[in-house]
Structure formats: structure tokens, C-alpha cells
Length: 152
Image (cartoon, rainbow, N blue to C red; front, side, top):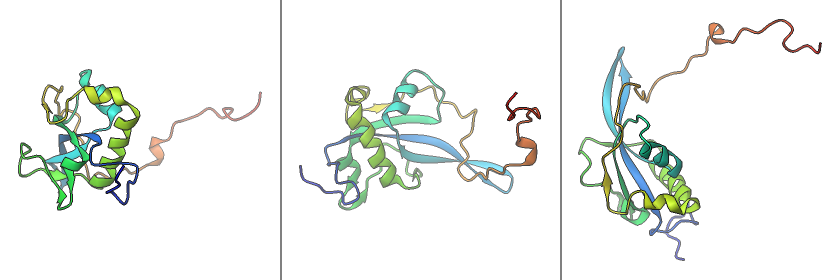
């Protein structure tokens, strides 16, 4: 096997991977604005999405690493909208997702390479906010009885 990925020597250009187009949101000045994000979908997540779980994914495209990560850079699929942006750490996450399909070979049969799947239960009711800060407050702590950690 010829290795072409210095950060992923266990992967080859023929390895299967699925990338999705998700509607996410960015919070700016108290308002949320939608953005289209291209990101890899691991095999377990794809299996759940195919069962009808509500998702922010509009579509998914099955391909190979060689089609997606070329010598000239990352190739966003031509049928994805031009305003679509790559997710953070796209290459690393794509390699990780490809490994999940190596471990779960039957998952590769869900969407054939080169096919775009559009039948997800698309919903933005629960918004994926990309730049939110999670601030933990004292009020968030679960109240426990005084004797919770005592041996009785």
C-alpha cells in the first residue's frame, strides 16, 4: 500500500469517507446567523442519521479520500453551495471518519461512493452554535444530600 498522507500513514486515497453539508449557526451581537459547513460524518453518526434522527445535515456525499483530499488541497464537492465552509480541523476529522469506515465495513454500503444522499430528517430546531461559550455557574451544580458521600 502506498502511503500518501504523512499524518495518516494507515490510510490510502482509496479509503471510503462520507462528508455532509450541515446548517450551523454563529452567534454575533446577540443574534444567530446560519452558515453552511462541510464536515466528515463518522460511520456511527451516519447509521443514526439514516434511522431518522433529526439532524442539521441537509445532505451527505460518499466518496474516497483521494477525491476529497488531493495534491492541490481539499476539494469541496461541486454540488455543495459555493458559500459552504470547511469545518475546523477538516483534514484530521476526515482521517478519523475514514478510520471508522475501515472498522465498520458494512457501513460503507449505506451510501455508494459518488452518490449524494438527501433523505435525512433535516431540522434546525436545535441549533448547532459553533462559537458558543459554555459557562458553568454555581447554580448548575446538582444539589446532594449531606450524607451522600458518607458511609452509613
